[in-house]
Length: 81
Image (cartoon, rainbow, N blue to C red; front, side, top):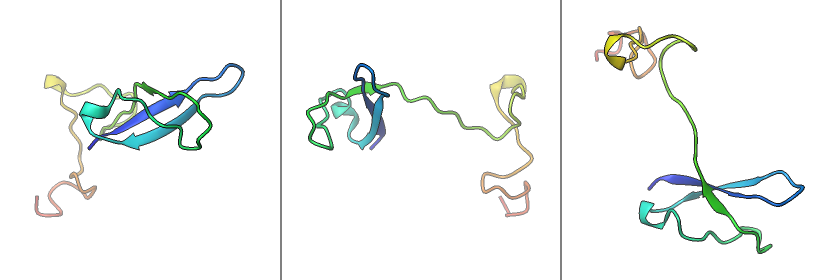
């Protein structure tokens, strides 16, 4: 199941963000206030990035990022993969 982020926006206060593990079919259903204060939480777009290259490096041709290390983090070929 995916983890979704929900936020509560109250005037004059910083946003309150919670993460909820739930089925995709339930992603837009209401979320109960975990502190019971009656706040309304709405799903927000989660933004994150992953990669194996240097920050700001352009991807290699074909749009794939190539790395000198294996997925396990060791130098390529040292783990037998």
